[in-house]
Image 1 (cartoon, rainbow, N blue to C red):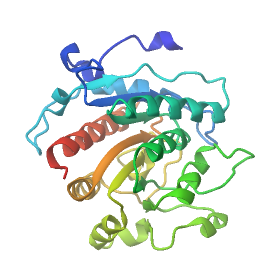
Image 2: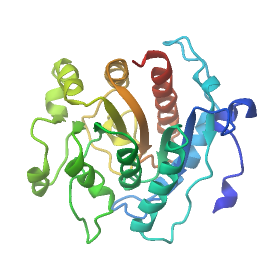
Image 3: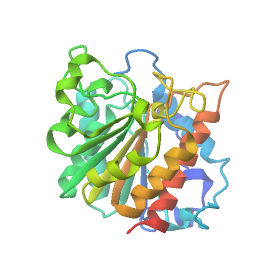
Image 4: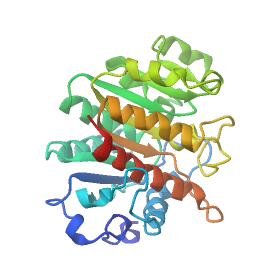
Amino acid sequence: MKKHYKKKTFAGISEKYATLETSKIVLIPVPYDSTQTWKKGSRKGPKAFLSAAKHMELYDIETDSEVYKKGIFLVSPIVNHSISSKKMVQKVYNTTKKYLFKEKFVTLIGGDHSISIGSIRAFGEKYPNLSILHMDAHIDLRPVYKGNPYNHACSMYEASRKYPLIQIGIRSMDILEKKFLQKGNVFYMHEIYKNDLWMKKAIQKLSKNVFISIDIDVFDPSITPSTGTPEPGGLDWYTTLRFFKKVFQKKKIIGFDIVELLPDEKESSTDFLAVKLYYKLLSYKYELTI
């Protein structure tokens, strides 16, 4: 499988901006989907993401910047589909920790949402006063699902026991998950769509240091159809960016991941949205942050 990932740079940027030494940003691809329970295929997400990146123009109009010049180091992907999800979580933890302690801004592209368990563990060790901003259609708070505590449906359970967990865009959950909710920290889509008052409330609940975990299905499937469990009634592009812009202006974002991209050979718009979102967040990080 590794032969599919020939050594390359993110978006084809010059090696000048892509070495570990010259890069402030690190991107870790994790093509793993062994815990997905409906459609599998998000293991192909990182490859589709990197392919779409080659067609992206690198000047961001809104921030009047070229953030790639901060340096983006593309790590060799964590590829091993035969290992257990527990071992994969450990690999993600080890790799994330390695680059965090090199003082890099670490980002990840999945893969199913189980990868976030490992990365959040590493961020939690590095940063005090951490909170998690979880963007998703699903609550992902099951302690165990189908006998596995490392299932994608459990991706936020461990974090919810340790940190403030602010969940945005939720519109699907099992009744058994209700008892694990952090009271007042869930912003449901049926409430969000009415007005923008939720943005201020959500940001006020975040601590100083924030890790963002983004499941692509937080968006409405009309703009992100290529995901494992598409749920109707999601966020639109500009509402999401407006919220993120406020978050980056008010809080210290210490890393983020984007997961659950399940590419479709006949539909590449979701791949491109994911990479545009990634680049936009980096632009906000280095042009707008406190």
